[in-house]
Image (cartoon, rainbow, N blue to C red; front, side, top):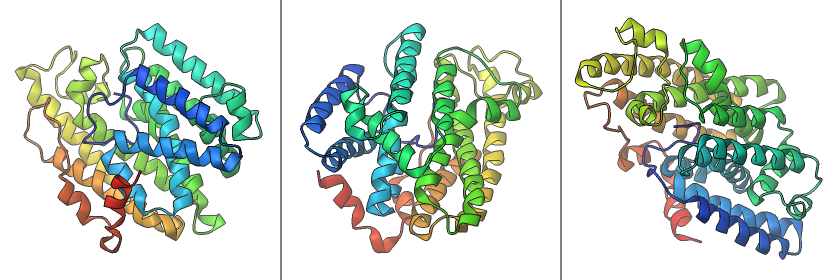
Length: 340
């Protein structure tokens, strides 16, 4: 699974079909073009981006409710822009060539959007709604354009089978594009405590992105294998006597468990390193970042201690998620779910 910063333990295998995404785009585009102003079009598209986030991720949707309203909207714009390419490679029933064509078209539209000066200009040129709002965030937050290209390259890698020789290979040639750059997007929105703290904030985002992906890979071995993907480093598998992970039979199960736990233990250090630099971020975002780190850190600990079968997905109960959220702001959760 092309999982990244936003992957959720509760996510169902399929939420919306390609046709449903297409209909959402068409409806939203028509309404945004009729909105009459840039700000009205932004609000309308962001409302739909929030709907996407609420549909696809419980954990990240909850923790981002503790961000300031303006930053929350920008994070929702980012989420929608990475969710759709992820669905192309993971969910839609398409051939590898069809997926690549959709990704190439999406990138072409992204590059068009970067040459526009406004959201409405992008819409008039046929750029998808969620790319127009994302491009607005990229422009206004001065996010390097190549970050999103690295993300799309990681999505392309998921259209073909392959494996990674070592952990460093996995991080440099997949996790960087699938998760680390997403953390960089968010860091530009969250902001740093001071200008001098920005590099530390980026380092924290990098560590958290790596940690999240290692947790996802440890959890989803069986699901990834069914998709023809192997994210467990080959040298770790070979150290356990596994040369060919063609199936997850009983003979291999114990060895794979040991690799999963090893990755979970490695992820633990990345979570700790991410939290060590939490103070580098702007104070109005630290509660959300801390809650995200804690929720997924707890999932990681469950994997590290798990004795379940490989095909049984670990998850964090909702009551545990609430324990890491600011109790003084619990009221935001039902408000976010029930207000439309």
